[in-house]
Image (cartoon, rainbow, N blue to C red):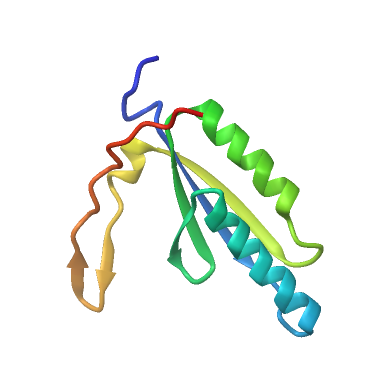
Length: 109
């Protein structure tokens, strides 16, 4: 398998879930916990991201997300290449945050 910046993928999950009722809050919390269990990290409160070694791996994680969708609310999934992710700029106030190095470990499953 050719591992390069155009084959390695990043998945972003953006969501806006209702929290009006106790059941809504439980569903939103469960969705976030399941994203973490599937290897996603929280970038912001309603934005989670995950490194995928290939497009096929990203496909599998997208299927898992679809199976975990709560009954209400908006969930968006964005897939970008590692090359595109390399152009990200993060700021804390007016100070640019240094880019995190790409993961060194390959996925084996």
